[in-house]
Image (cartoon, rainbow, N blue to C red):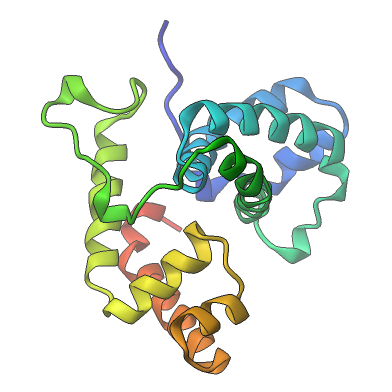
Length: 197
């Protein structure tokens, strides 16, 4: 089966969300095609388990279908909304996974790279996906170590500013600054991933 070409997820049109809110199933299918790879990757990253991530995404898209009318374009882009939903739902699952004995994944640099194109971790991963991942790893590796650590604790560990500050024995203001600087640097470094504005 031939897969449709994936669009850059940062280009999801808010009008697509409006169509879904009116019950347009084709628009919902387009949203899934444009966002599922990113959201699945994020869920796997947080949960550390592909099966759990797949189950989470199934529930997430059902929730999106039911609650899409709550999306407010003034509060952010569609992809930011989807990423925030995925992140919060995945983090909410972590305690129950810990009880089941599942562990979280390590740092982004700890992920094994395939040694050949036939050994990719995802059959649908494209050369562009691999290039993006390499660009992200490079951008993260170039951040100061403190910024890498706080971003990892915030986005992969799901910790609040207060929790990160307590863990690192640093003031909350310092943590907020490190996260802000790290995100700003990554935004600049990853601009090529966004495609033309």
